[in-house]
Length: 113
Image 1 (cartoon, rainbow, N blue to C red):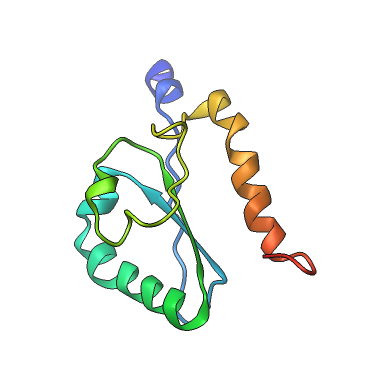
Image 2: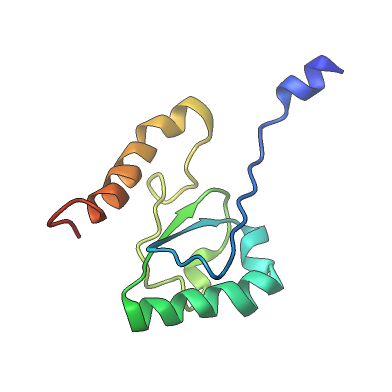
């Protein structure tokens, strides 16, 4: 049992209230994300409207392979990838994530973004 649990990668679920307004939206792009009726029918339209109306920053990050380049609303965005492939998990992802975090953090610095 212990070895099976140790081999499983952690999964994190983040939930929030729509009354709390975000300044940045981070989208973890995967095939499951792109098939979700709730995400495509509720979350994405709301985020895109806020992007248009308020300048909401949207950071799509490719975490699993999928056909994101065929998605009309996603295709024109700068999707963060590892040279066109999903960001690697674990230690290999450590090289790419700091750049994304720094870019997002710079928005909140005086004179940023």
